Amino acid sequence: MEHATTLDHTEDVYEPSLTPDSLGKLGMWVFLVGDTMSFGALLAAYAAIRAGAGAIGWVPPTEILGIELTAFMTFLLICSSVTMVKALESIQNGNVSRMCMFLGLTIGGGIIFLGLQAYEWYHLIHHGLTLTGIPDHGLSGAAVSGSTLFGPTFYAITGFHGMHVTGGVIYLIVILIHGLRGRYTAEFNHEVEIVGLYWHFVDLIWIMVFTFIYLL
Amino acid sequence: MAQNGHKEHPKYMNIFWWLTGLTVLELLVVIPDFPTVVKAILLIGLACAKAILVANYFMHLKFERRTLAIIVMTPFIICVLLVFALMPDLTLDSRIEGATQPTTEVVDTSAH
Image (cartoon, rainbow over all chains, first blue to last red; front, side, top):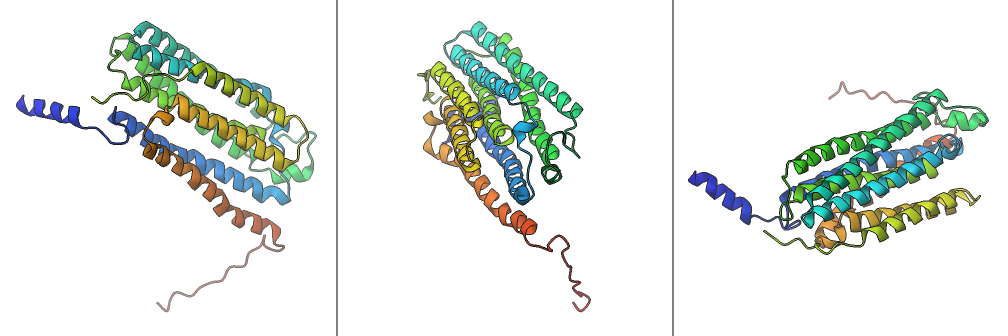
């Protein structure tokens, strides 16, 4: 018993210098920095492949991918980021029910995003964008032959992001359940802030993916 | 317990409108027939502006220790370097005639 008290005391006084308010937050930041490298490596490889295909040609993504739908998906993630910060703001003000409502809206945004991505993939696959080929209607032969990696890079990067969104939705559901059980208060809410960091990171990465994969 | 440094919340709705506006601007840049380089610079600039807004205000990086912000920036710099590191390999290979059939030299290692 005495030993346990000593441990609790040690935990209370320990403050990481980078994130003094929470050790867990430091852990999440470290994870996010590592994850940035994963996405960064994928996007850098994509940029290099496109530059390498420069002499032969690369099909402009706007000719194959639907910009309108993905622009809406971007807007949706921005909205879900706003609901996420509103959830944190609510619990910091001690309003548990408002936090749960905003967490629910964030989860809803994530699920709709995943549904739209599934819808997009379904249509692209049916139109011939696969891991080995691209739709060739109306495109020059050189551009088609130079873009054999269009499908693999597209599915790898958007799929990797989609997996992050799926993980984020599950993570948010767990936090929502804790919230509904009354775990969080105006004083104890770091777990909500940490899940928020992850969710905003997913939004931030989509901003980059939308620009590099869909618009450029 | 240490005090939270960001109890005074930024105006999140203002950030939301900025992000929405920048997204609309991105779509407007895609439509006209700009040269590819101009389009790329504008789109990357807009994406970076949006990413900085999300990181600074939604992820509260602006209100964290400066050291943390520097650490978070590191992978972005490394990724840009990675693009330039990969570039020569791919561009050279496709532009040098006859490079599609590289010759391989057999090195005799039996002497070691």
